[in-house]
Amino acid sequence: MPLQNRVTPMGDIVATPHRGMFTGNRGIIHDPATRTLLNRRWSSPAWLVCLCEFRGKRRDVMATRSWTELFFLDETTALAAGHRPCFYCRRDDAERFRAAWEIGNGVSDIRASEIDKVLHRERLDRGRKRLHPLPLPIDRLPDGAMVQAEDESFLILHGRALRWSFAGYGAARDDIAAPLLLTPPSTLRVLRAGYRPVLHPSAREP
Image (cartoon, rainbow, N blue to C red):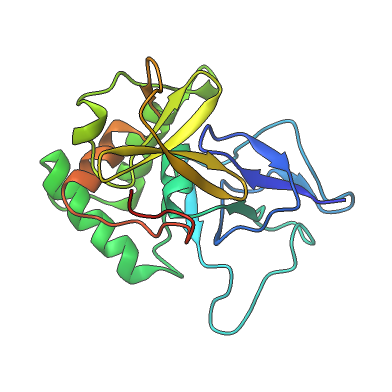
C-alpha cells in the first residue's frame, strides 16, 4: 500500500503509487509508529520543496519523529500548492526564487520567514486551498503557472493549458471553462519576474 504523501496542485495529500520528482514538507504531520498522517495537514508555515536525494542520502519516509516527507510530480505542482524552494538542500534555486520574489513583488531584503507568511495567507482559506481570480488571460500567464477548472488542474505552458495528473501532463486543451488561479499570486509574480520551475518531462511545448 502506498503511503499518503503525494501532494496535488490543490494542496491535498493523497496515496498513489506514482513517484514524484521532488520531496518537501510542512513540518511534522505524521505518526512514525503507523506511518500515517495526523489530522492536521501542516505544523509550520514554512512549506518547502526539497531534493529527493541530498549529498548522497535519501530519507526513510515517515520513519522518525522528524519532518513528514511529501512528494510532488514536479516543482510547478509544489509551487501551485503553496510551497517554495528549500534554502538548505536547494540553496541556489531558493536564492533565485527570492531574487525573483523581490523583483516581482516590489520588495527588498526579504527573509524566508516573511515569504512564508505571505504564502500562508495566499494558499489557505479557512483550512482549504484558496483559489484566486486570474489576473491575466490564460495565454498571457507565465510558464509554470497552474489553474483550476472544476475538478481538474492545468499547467500553463506557452499560453496553453496542459491537464495535470499524478502520471504527468496531458495534451494541451483550449476548452477549459471559468479557470481560477491555483498558484499563489505572489508566486505568480515570481514566475513573471523570471523564475523557471522544474517541469515534469511529460510537459511538452504545444
